[in-house]
Image (cartoon, rainbow over all chains, first blue to last red; front, side, top):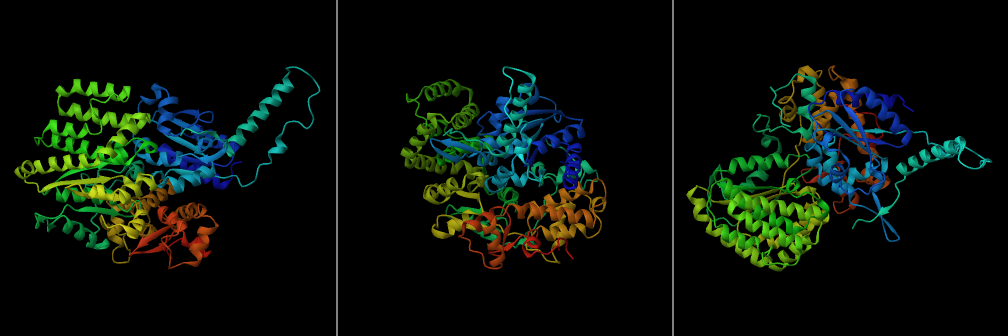
Length: 210
Length: 428
């Protein structure tokens, strides 16, 4: 939920967004998916000058944000008038770890983002939002120092109340009815939402690209 | 997107724009450059000029050895700006060959030291072409062919590229350079086997490449003298973006290779590297760009970095910007970032004590929250004696939690209240 600290940061973020003269990159760190969605909606409703687009990178193995932009952002957006769009990249944190055989190891994503800093800030006509988890945010601080020293628009939204995921499981007992019905579909949808959130907070391993 | 402003700006949006480090204006063209020589000291600058045989803007030693200079300094300490200034001041004596690795090598994961040698040759050709200095295209092709053998059939791409180069050659040297540049980017981007082949070829032919390059550099001396230059000055910026291990390879392990090239070089290198460089190698003349050591006498000069950009009275209550300057610890990047955030926090009002306190607290907290238990213990126990060889200390230097001043590390003033457990965030 939005508290007074979030509110203060949000206000500052909106002042920044509404007074931009050129495109730039925003880093937003949220520790829960629920909070991320709330902040996203606030940004969307508080900055009507932009058309907001969300690009979910969770299903993809990302080793370069520039490559992801080339691949997943439409030509229309890439060649749009400056400051027409705000493109929100979510789920990039799930590419921080890759699986290498039986081993789980960190990818070079943070270092790569550091290296492509100049291009991320200067090559695109849209505002770039990179939504990250606290773990990835820390990783960027140490592994992508040059990027983060340019990213003066970085905002951290932390929900201090730990979420009790289990309390949100939409059932305690198995369904007695069989087949596809509204109740079953409803349960599946809620479980999928919970799974999305867990994936965002605990990035799952990817296949190694090396 | 380059915008023009009337400085110092008084408009809120413009102020945010010109304080933002990622929209850094052309500070020489816009007259925003602040000469900090009296604040930093000129020792490092004098050493660099002496190495290049220059004194008071004049060449005093025409037969100086080919200096290889490493300029290190904290992130945001002004290395790139000072490099630009040196190029400007030396441009009538040395023909600069400027290489920004970050801009020209597009993908870190595939960058190899060999790519940097290719860039040297490509940018040298580009500089010659841009300055209408005649050179033997044939001889340069001989060098580039040492990494891209035109007869090579090793890969389809490489062969098709060379066929393409051959057909474009008649279109002039700029077309050839463009193709070389494009090819370098494409092999890096594609992470194809061509990259390995080029790497292997350069490794195998490195002596020949250096020897041929030196022959060309020597043969160009006459043309350079005709134009009044004493030689070339290769200026390599953006190396701090290189992966640390790669930077160590380029600047330490492969240092002898650069040392064989008969030309002067200045490299801007990561601050972390200096401890490794101190540890063993003597191939480079190493100069540190000092942090600005602040005191009451020079605070005005330092804060003028901001007041040249934005009108102080329009945005700050009296004394607030002085406090920001003090809390920046002498880091130009932090000075701009704190000013930017103070304006955002004030949201169209003057920055006052409350908004400044929020700004300094937020920035200090941001840095403090990134520290783990071990970092914090080191900060609490080694207030004046940090071990530069310690990995945790290196991390804190890299992330500006520790700042090097006069050869020793001090805790960033923004972090200090969190370490001490006081709430003295302002400058009282």
